[in-house]
Image 1 (tube, rainbow, N blue to C red):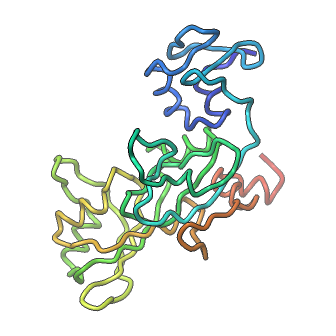
Image 2 (image 1 turned 60 degrees about the vertical axis):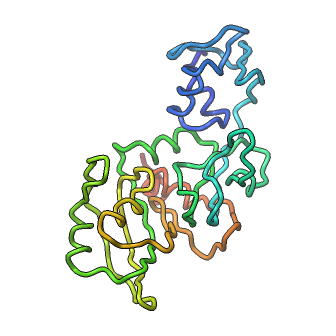
Length: 247
């Protein structure tokens, strides 16, 4: 049965449906030798579908991995030619075409979810779902109550974008600085760093400890593990189904 190309590519492990739409609009996808167009349908068993000239693999078994991304590693599968930096894909040695769900700054560390489940990727990254992410942030100086309150309400960044309200809590002192815990539902690029710069709070370290219901746990930098069935169900919102057996 014909299906939309972005769904076929997502099921083959090429990222979220939105990411696969970008492949199509960039002219990187062909069906039976012809450049594909957005909205086009194909039959994966009958049509020859290629990305960058390479045939796509059949739909893979869905894979879910939690990785502790260390600092100075790219949250990407591919990198630009000549870039010698490591990517998260370099750290996860599995045959499936897994990709990171969302991004974590090059300088930041912590939990990254790697999967080839395009539908889950879309659910966790699309703003309308509002999935929370939790971070521990080490600041070079201790924030005062006014700075924390401004952070909670939302801060106008240099590009005049105002961040959404967030949950920020003082956690502990660290020398002249402090650890704070930040829970947020949006994830603009470098948002925590840009927010702290506007507030006059130099950032020393950012560690992501949770994505939705998935927690970093005891993983150390560069370590990874497969998710449990319960963790996968939690991310998909299937806890009730598993517990009651009803839909």
